[in-house]
Image (tube, rainbow, N blue to C red; front, side):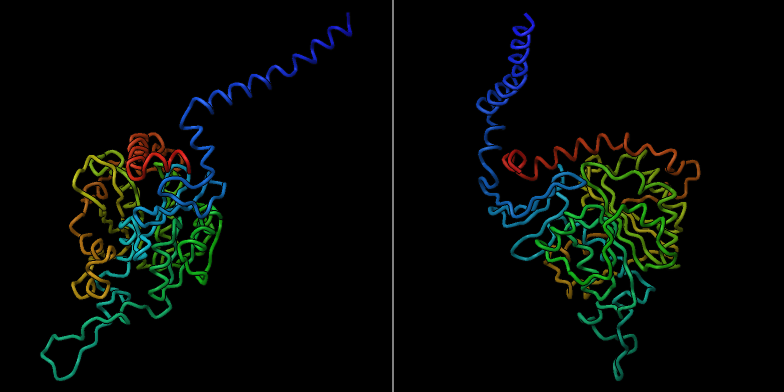
Length: 373
């Protein structure tokens, strides 16, 4: 009897495995989404995958959209950047807003400050801007937190600014180097957590900080707290400029108010510009600029002519000032509580944004992409 029972138990051991295989085959053969995703093995329809790596933020991939002639980088359920293959321009124009940190009146970095008076000309006449006037002396330093495909880092590097990059995901950095022409000779690259880096960085180091950490429909809450903003202010030079990308809804006064107030506790001047302002109840990219000194931007016609008025970069910068979101009332409102490490409601408040982001991603690229990549 004992031997018979042992034989029966040995047979039963295979039941879970058989059941699992049966369910898997049934799903594969009856669910078109699963079967197409497995059979495709990489490239279907108009898409061609050129890079894929599972990393700390999920699957990081680079895919060519051959119909629209663009290359994009995906991390999880977010497109974190891309370039048009014909021009090399960013597919997300808001990333060019960060270039405006060097276009502020009264700053030596402002290209207009490099105009030279010319003899034998009417009073007030100055030499037109040239491409050379766009380049810095090499003494300026910038920090980019959150790399994406490297649009801002590459742009600042081309202006002779020494750029440090902090990126938590090594796969994102690798993909940016190999597939998006990120310069290999940046000043420094730190593959680490952004909050840890700014907590430990030396004071008064940077002229500019570009802060862009949105992914997956939300931002890391720890990088938007009052303590984090204080650290950003500490590692900036006395007249340094912070450019902080935030994805949200302009009319969401609760979230916008607390974010703006948090920044305002460390910076005397704060301004905000949206990528699109056609519908203030719809999620959009917004760039906060903050500094201890006034933020009067000098984006002149001759500067745009050098950049190229008809390029994406030129059009975006040319329209930036008309897309301002007035946050002055929030910044000066002492009744608004700043977001802190101990009181940080951003994860809960960003639920609606995350849902809109999910639908936006599905609308930007066809369903076959999301099912197969």
